[in-house]
Image 1 (cartoon, rainbow, N blue to C red):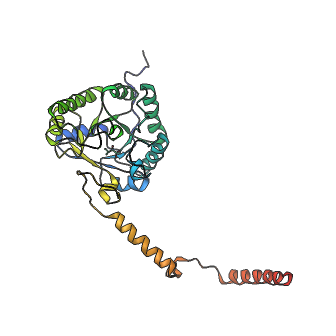
Image 2: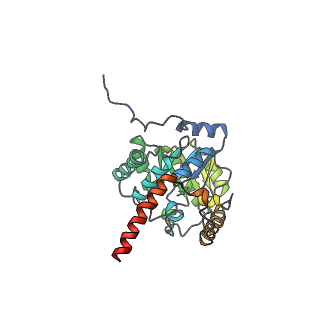
Image 3: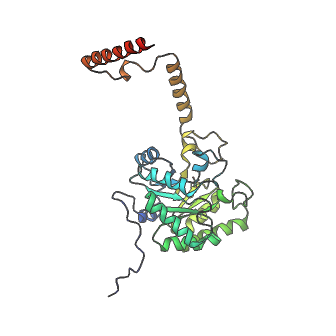
Length: 304
Ligand code: KIV
């Protein structure tokens, strides 16, 4: 009898995790899938408590967390550190690590090696990578190693220069057909889901209806099976120009600025710390301490 498994074993899901198969069932039930980015442990925990189904540790971290002008500089080491932080906070949602630019383009082997690092070292449940075409073999190779892959087409920020900037994609019939072909090819390559970024609603709708895997839209309309937004955009933490598709649900940046300004004023005006923020010591220990230090002071005074 052969002991060789017919299929590679997928990474073992932790108890209480959303099963990967649930996503296709949600699509079939027409139940919208909620995805949000997060980059640290409190973010993962809050996304989980808010009921997100998927948490993406996006390479948008290069911009939102690390101050770069684009997602391109994100490194494997940075993404591993951020992904590990998120997986320690998010229990129920599937945590998807975004493969940074340069970590999967060179070869199938390197893509698989880096995807495995996300699962083994950072506890990711799946990875996401941008593009189709030459990237289809990367998807096949990573899926064959037992790691679920989410695709990403439309506006793919890692190749924004090639696309002529951060612009909506698939706005001509020819380009829209190209997107539909890419979407079909990514599904055939084994993606469990597909991000559609900055794609016209009718094109997103057509792709969504054609695929059996769920589409997750960002700037791709309510025609998609789910939606994703970037943490800093939702919460009002990102100071740059917001894309058309962003909806801000809070002004947390303003709340933080007000709190820090108040704290600084309290320190300068000696209103903080107060008695309640300090530690006491037993009276007899204090007396001993004062006696010991006053003797020392006297010796020092004698020598001086
Ligand atoms: O990096 C990211 O946050 C993303 C989302 C915008 C889908 O790729």
